[in-house]
Amino acid sequence: MGIALKKMYAVAIADDHTLMRNALARLIGSFDHFSVVYEAGSGKELLEKIQTIQIPDIVLLDINMPEMNGFETASVLTRYYPQIKILSLSMNTDEASVIKMLRLGAKGYLMKNVEPDELHLALDSIVKKDFYLSESISGKIISGLHKAVDVNPDEIKISDKEKEFLRLTCTEMSYKEIADRMFVSPRTIDDYRNALFEKLNVKTRMGLAMYAIKNKLVDGL
Image (cartoon, rainbow, N blue to C red; front, side, top):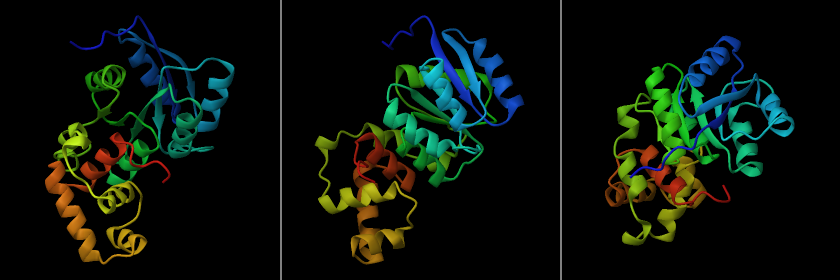
């Protein structure tokens, strides 16, 4: 049985496009259990309102903003307001952006062109399941992702070197740069990657990164 939603969740929206913010506010205001308490045009303005108005339950956070972009804002929110659930909202579909936002504490990643029903589903999901990743990002990127997230780390054997490799997949380093960082050959990195693909039943770097994030292997990055 799913976790019942409480009566109302306070949502804050941070996006530098006024029309987008207003449209999102009206839409979210029509959903049961969710109320938009304020909007902000930048990460800096969002933090000011959190400090002076109220701490919301959820922040809908754009990535590309002036005066603190979404990455910088997510980092601050995760450090000082870990109780806030961050739902990233962006037009960026590249793996690096998705991985970086999730590593910085976002509970979900949503494309700006999603249908209203999916936005509602995403809000419900991060409240009840603490996670949401839009399927519109890419079926290829998501391939095997949820299987990796659900793998019990106690049921598989991952070496210390493989754990270090998993941590580094969450960065913006290329595989060659990871090899240099670990003082091993690119061929050895390929061996780590392929072994973990099989152990975790995933096919992409995104799947590896999500396993590392969900199992808290990224501390200290």
